[in-house]
Amino acid sequence: MPRSDVTKRVGSRRSARWPSWRILSGPQSWGRNYPSELGEHHGRTIRYLMGNKYAQLVYNPFLRKAFSYSYQAQVDEFVRLFGKQPSHIDGHHHMHLCANILLSNMIPAHTKLRRNFSFWPGEKSMSNRTYRWLVDRWLARRYRLADYFFDLTQCIEGKKLDRVAALAKSSNVELMTHPTVSAEKAFLMSDEFQVILQHLEIGGYALV
Image 1: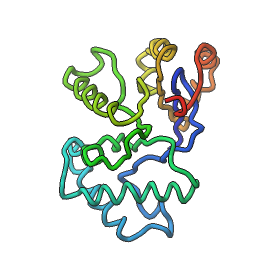
Image 2: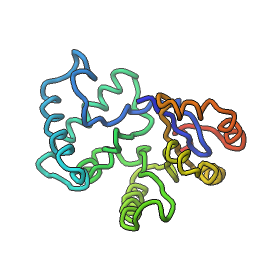
Image 3: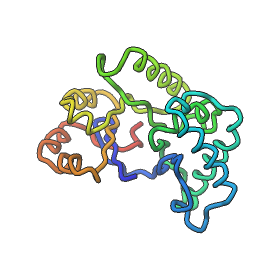
Image 4: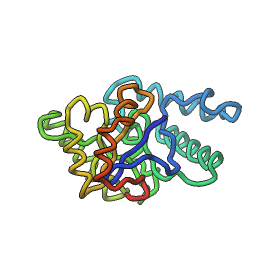
């Protein structure tokens, strides 16, 4: 996916990354190299994760092999294409944070990993923020994370980019952007955004 991240003080993504753990990956993503066994495992994980919006929160022991096979197949394909390991792991719709991935410890320790979205008090329910905090605290014990993670559209609509920039002066902050979204592209190319960047150290996941 065409994303850029703004890390420690905001930055553009230049490092090799795993191009999303896609639960909807299929032959169109792999071409002629798409293994039939991978298709079977993908089908099982897709049906499970798409069946209920809370499915990703529940560990399913019967899908342990399917998740493990799908994960490793995509890492191997990344290495085949780019000749090196991904710089960090993130997933489409944050599926890399689903219970079957995290509780199986299939992602090696000390890997750079995308955390949950960060929110200020009042933006989400107390239970929602508490859950995210607990997961991020567990992740921080095993993986390398940015200190905060925000979405550009939410920051623009919520008029909170100034607060995010203030955090980035003393913390590692990742700002997810989608340049294919016209409103985000316009903002990224604006003088306003350039002024913000002038006061921040720009970098990628190498800073995490």
